[in-house]
Every structure is written in C-alpha cells, then in structure tokens.
Image (cartoon, rainbow, N blue to C red; front, side, top):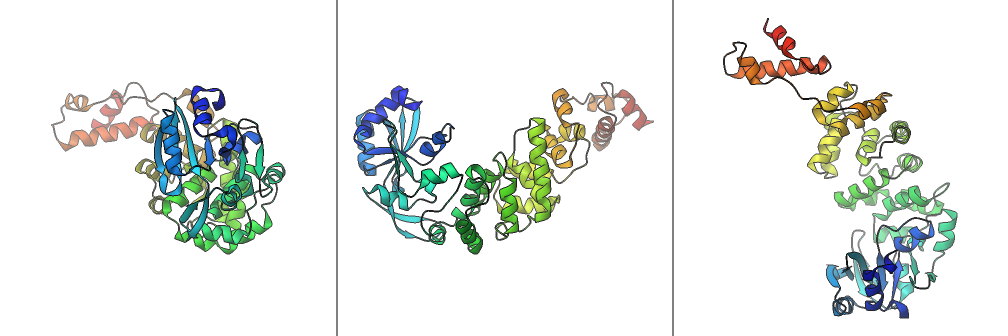
Length: 381
C-alpha cells in the first residue's frame, strides 16, 4: 500500500493528513471498499493550490501544476504519484466546463461531484469515511445515483450522461437508477455539445469494461447514442454480446475498438466516418476500418494486417478455430524477391513488381509454402 512507502510517508506529513487537512477522495476510496486496488491516488485538501505547492516543495516533493486553474497539483514523491485538488464549489457551468472557487467546506466540494459513490472522503490513517449523500449505501446496493437533482448535475457537465452508464456497467446491479436514467434520456441531445475527444474517451472506457452488454442495450434502446453515434443500432447488440462471450471463452483481452466495430455496420466508409468523428488516432482508425473486411481467411489477415486485426475479424466473424490459430501462428516470410524474377529472364521494370505481387497472392492462397519457386514458374509458363 502507498502509505507504507517512503513517498507515502512524506505526503502524509506535507499535506497534514494527520490533522484532517487532506483526505483521499473518489475512486481512491470507492475501489478499495469494493475489494479492488485503486488505480490512482487522489486527494482533496483544504490547502489552496499555492499552499499545496509550497508545502510539497518544502518537503522536497516535486509539485506539478497540472490543473492549477481547477485546483489540481500533481505530487511526485519517491516515484509515488498523487493528484491533490483543493476543495471547490462551482461558480458557473455551461455543460462543458466549470468555473470554480476554492473553499474549505467538505460538503460543498462533495455536492459538486457527479455520483454519490464518487463523493466519499477517507482519512487514510484512521479509515474514517465522510459520506454526505449516502454513497456507502449506494455502493453496497450496486446503485449509481446522481447527487441531488440529476438534471442539474447533467446541466453542469453533459459528459455525466455517458459516465452514468459507464459507472452503472462497472458498479451497478440490476436496473439503472430510474431518476438518473430518465434524466439522461431527456437530455441525451446535450451530448452534441461535447468535444469529440470527451465522447470518444467515455465510449471506449465503457466498451472496455468486462461486461458492458446489458448497459449498452439500454443505451441503444433509449436513444442515448443517437445524437453522437447514430450508426449504432439495436439489432447489432447481439453481435456485441457474442464478441464479449467469445473473448471470455477464448481468453482474449477485451478491446473497445473491436467491440465498437461489433455495434457498427461492416462498411469501411461508415467506419472511417465514425473514426473521423471520434478523432481516433491513425492506428486506431486503421484497426477499426479493417474490421469491415470479414470472412477473409484468418491466416491471410494475420499476414497482411497483423495478428490483432486477425483476432478482431475472427471474433467478429465467429471463427471457432481462432484460439488454436493464434497459439500456433508464426509470421511467415515471403521467400521470393525481385532477384528471383530477374533470374528467370524477366527484364527489369514494372513487370518484376507485378509478378512478385501475383506470386505473393498465390503463395498466400496456397497456405504459405516454404518453396514458392513452383508458383513463380507457373506464373511465367
């Protein structure tokens, strides 16, 4: 645990944790309560950003003003990385960003957060938890619930619509909270005001969860995706379910782009438009678009486009031989070169490249034989 490290001890002292000036917050509290390791160390503090930086640096801890306008300082102590954010209250919001004022009021800071399960504060030394809005009960019940009036929370930040579903897929049990669901449905068009990058990140996080199928089905049925991803249709949810099951049975790591492809038409032009809209990287765009070509022999896909693309297309096509193929696959090397073509009397020029291309295609179709001379001879006969 981070507390037992030298960096942890220095943070405890610098941030005056023993006297309650700084506490763990959010996932750093929520996840351990569920028996999972927290992915990040997040602190909330009464110190202003300037005071936080001064206290950290006085203890020899590196302080990086990563989000200083919103009160966030990243502390790096002996390799331990933690985010320290001053308690805040919202002054103005427009659905995309908030103007904040710093405060010393823990409840005011909690009230501006999205869900009750994310508004838990803990003293890491004593384990005492501050819960202002029933987050502990909601966590125990597997219930994702907005703090206060759901419509008001969504009006502050429209991304909370997608976060509501992602958190339900991760932590929820049974049906989604009715009030929260109704508010998300009513305000789904607000998603169009968000940056494409924020939408992309949330959608991919949702699809990367172990089992997002039931939640995605609700989202599709309720029209949540329609404003930003109208290409997703309800009839494609069963393919998502099949892909998720095949990943689990075959021992393949879930991949959000593969799962996104399951929800979209197998049409390269459509996939390219979606990739552009979501501002995927060039590598991500290529991977998504390549999934359109299904039914191609898996060995050919693996040779031309790589094993990841082969796994994607095989899972999307329901190829039952995939597991054995991946275990045995070794990338073959095309045994011919331009020198082999020239040695058979072909004059230098475009014909050499054309013949090599034809020979490679025939070699692939033949199953990558070690000796490809016969293939070339046949083409030249």
